[in-house]
Length: 272
Image (cartoon, rainbow, N blue to C red):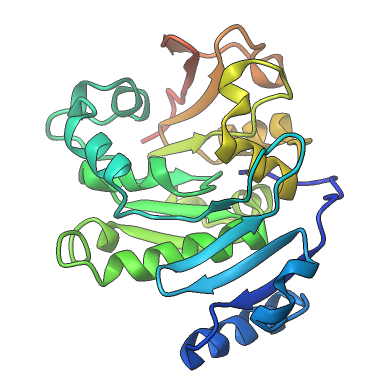
């Protein structure tokens, strides 16, 4: 997820579930790192939005407003039923996402996910056997992502397999790619910038509403593509809404179209 140039209307604080000293310690440490107020559970009602440590992990917790009718939460959960189902029944190597990034029988590219967000696509790449480097520059999403990775690593089902394929860096993707070692290029760079503001139903999903409140609209998607094209080993993949214009007015080598979105694929014929 790319940020920024956005001022959230929400006041944000960090808190914890009452009665667990370890959660209190973790929330205090995160508040110090992020420079945000740390509050006891008794004060949570004073804030419109919170990062809260619970026994089930770190989550964003929002009060309801006109757009979100009731209090809502968001967290990174690589162990969720929905993600597990997608991993097991998403189509394997034949699914559009896998084909777009260059996964095929006997080929598992090293993928740089430059807009990791909540990490779902990175997790699926790793579940298909790819090494994945995730970049995320939003401190809030990065905190959720790091927490989700730590909890997933403790899972007997995936801790030593899928999560071992993932590495995570909190940084600005453009800066990272411009300064990275050119001798260690990833095979594929995956970009999934925040979709343009719209009234379309796909953009009204609760998850996207919450994320938009904190990271805002992407103002530098074109620059991100240019940096990725300059750094890519073999290909750059951009997820776009169906019907949306291409980034930076650069036509892709080809596109894979789905019902509501598409993958624009830019092949680097000089990549090794």
